[in-house]
Image (cartoon, rainbow, N blue to C red; front, side, top):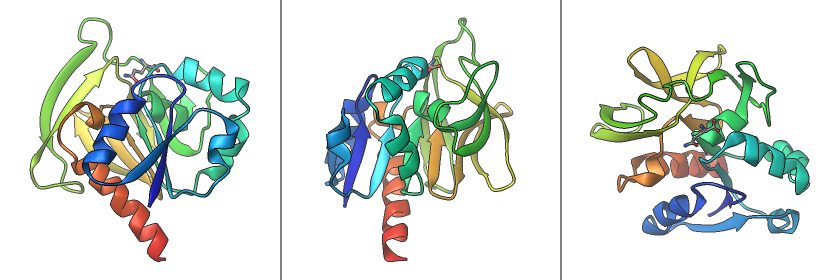
Length: 191
Ligand code: GLN
């Protein structure tokens, strides 16, 4: 199994560390030639969605990456925004996932915080949620499964092979979310 991590901007190296800790091979996607060879899953990291969105176009990665979705993809924070079909007051980027998101939803006062919550689909032990200028999901389409809500706001969801979180599992030592994503890839491969 081999996972590509979009490495244009933001917290991509932390995802690599999580995958390394699980013994899963990964590589950085910085330009078109990086995605010529086959791979099994894609991670779109946190960072600044506007910057990542612009770079996707500038580097001619927008179309190839968009066409690749169907392959399991995990978007964290800005990565969630990149995958969303609807972004309040803004144009969508890749726009493959039927969710409506609000950027920087938590506002400046509490732009970073953490919380522990049990997410039954992922693990029966509490998972540390780390939020940094995070979006939340305002609404989801019929095919989207809500994995976690915090104070009434959706902060993790899955639609088919697309997994998104408002928070940053890669900034914690807990590997359960990455394990869950790896299982999505295994299931897809075994079908
Ligand atoms: N605020 C960023 C955005 O709107 C997301 C922050 C993050 O990825 N930690 O793109």
